[in-house]
Amino acid sequence: MKGNPTMGISESLQQKFYQVLKHQCTLPDFEKWVYATRELEEELPADVYLELISLNYNDKFAYNKLEKILNPFIEYGKFEMRRIVAILNSIINRDENCADSIRMTYELYWSGYNFLQLLGLKYGLSVSCPAAGNYQKLWEEISREEQEELLNELYPEIVQDAQQVISWIEDGKVVIKETVDERGRFDYEDLRSAEEIKMGEF
Image (cartoon, helix red, strand yellow):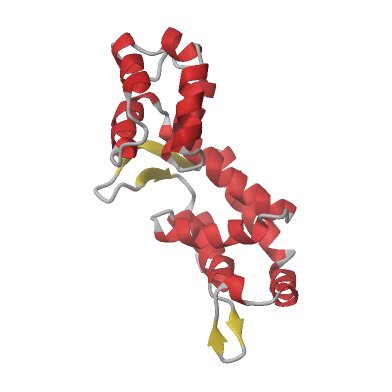
């Protein structure tokens, strides 16, 4: 396939590739999907399709092999931005996964997304290592009542800060690229003004 390998590959297929490589889909489930999805044979180059259906998904190196096969066919930047927006919307809506989403902002900040510094350090860290008396505990180690109390302290202020980050993404002021650095982290372009960058700092 000449040019950009993702050209001609439907978004639904790319999304499934992305999900399995991000461990949002198990290898056994992905294997079943491969055998059941006719569009793969229609949209992928013949040699790539053959690699997918011939791969031993029980092999201990199956994930690494799959990564090499699928990587050229995924627009990572697009799906990575959607993942971040979904995490932020989980926080805004205070859904059942909001605590994990808040904690994820800390992990994402430390993975190199500096535009999440305020969310990660002000809120994410407090959920990752909540204070309990004179000790730091894991979120799972504190009681349900303590969890709700901590979340109540973060809301509603966290909503405004999460909405701010979404606006930067939607306005094209933060653009995640397809390229990764030497540590395997996605590069991104920061087009925010100096004032907006300061707004995102902690």
